[in-house]
Image (tube, rainbow, N blue to C red):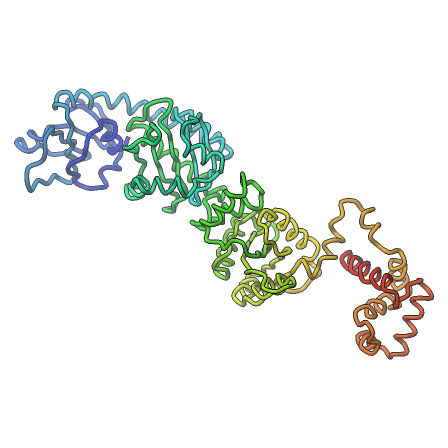
Length: 517
């Protein structure tokens, strides 16, 4: 067990520490007379302050000296590098008796550490680990990530703790609850200490252990334990730290740490999954991300190497984020999801398409990043109501399936390829068949069999209404050839290109057929 655990369990206050690193040393508490100890162990020996001063007691090689006093320290006192002086209200004899109980507690701690590791090995996700680690600790557990998103809970939480119930119902630690934690200095103290602490003040009559989860020196979230079913001891604090380390490994593997440490936005993940409990919670969490509200947004799926996986798209997220300072992103197994604000509509008509194109295609940093890394961005219809985010992501992925091989450019827009997506979207073939005017299908079949261009001529007639010269030029034929073909379209396929309904049928069905390639 760590020396810090010994001090926590003995409930003594360190007055002088020879080296700060001593507190994280693994030690074995032994009485003075004990001789049978492992040679590689760091031994913790006990003595009184009087003996330390008067008899010049020193720590032997591989030992740490725990010095007890009931009073303060003399002026200009300093202890040796391998000594810790602690203050405790017990007399030295009573303190020593308590000290001699430590080996039994250390043995129990080791057994519980093994159980915690077994819980980790047997858990496939954080929810399972929360349940199993809560059982080892004997108290309720809450695991959150760096974005204050609730990742997992376990145990029975009391109904008369409104802060806990708010977190459980919303799925996030609200700004109000987090502000209370920051205000009492607990979070800052844990960050400074780099290990779990038991709160001195109780919230709603209960104490909490707050532990920050670190992995590769990054803050991944928090592992908090409520003192509800059994008292929390100093040994429990070390066990909570160990559970937090194991949770950090799982959070890293799952990529669930949140945008603050480069793992993508938990808020956007919940937004596209439609998992927010209600709209006020959604808006409150979006405010914390810095994303502007009540504007229009572009939702896009950025796709690169096939089968690259979530780690790859996590790195892509960092690249895209440098091009969009105010966007949200989250990595998935098959794509990077990006939500970027494009501002408000400032005209009578609908200018979201134009603003989205300016924000995306006009962003040279984005287009260069896509080009240099062989990426493509598939952009859904702009949205103003963020509850529509799941549907917009489906649009973007449908667009990618329909146009990935046929449309050039690094940024592909849904509204420019609507019919291609529509052609690929019907769940049953008969739905697509119903949308097609059979006269246009017959014209396409005839062209394919005979090498003619009647359908192309009909399309140019629609594209250049009232301008035969432009239509003929686009077809690279003489005007007389163009008029001949238009007449043959009416004669062979019963489509009058002067009739508005026939022109609409030609345009619509041709777009669908082009979507079918």
